[in-house]
Image 1: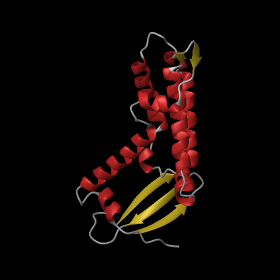
Image 2 (image 1 turned 180 degrees about the vertical axis):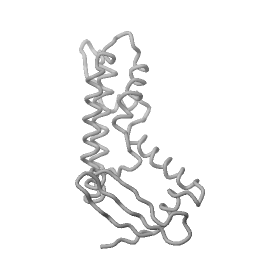
Image 3 (image 1 turned 90 degrees about the vertical axis):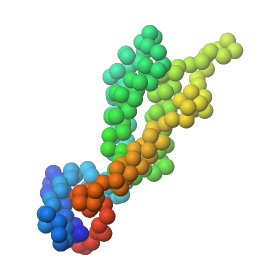
Image 4 (image 1 turned 180 degrees about the horizontal axis):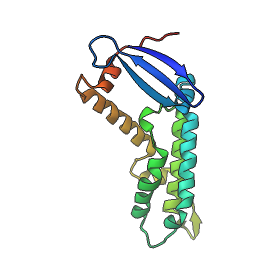
Length: 180
């Protein structure tokens, strides 16, 4: 398999040439500029993760009125987080290569939201903020980083189970030969 890169001002295009017996001799695959900049040049998606966290913050503050309703149970608020905010933050996680710093940023974001959902605790006549350990126990060890790792493994398992004649499987099993 051979990959050639051509660049334009708005997009980066890659022409993948497959050898031999494949139905199509070449496949045109176009990816957007951010993918080229962050994944190929720097092998980092740190800025993309920061954009996702900011988008999650914007979504939370746009829906903060729902999270402040006292009639809604904590379980309902967690469900709101998982359905409204979680998908925005975790869009495209299957392709992320996360560092410990990225994982920590995601965990800080999630802990901050769960601290708002679970609220303060009344102890010994005064209101106190919940500790990270208490929040972890209340969530039964579930967090966004574990979920992301599970999604990536699930995606890999799906790729492994694919039939050998499908294009994603062919690309996954081929060795790449670069041009420069």
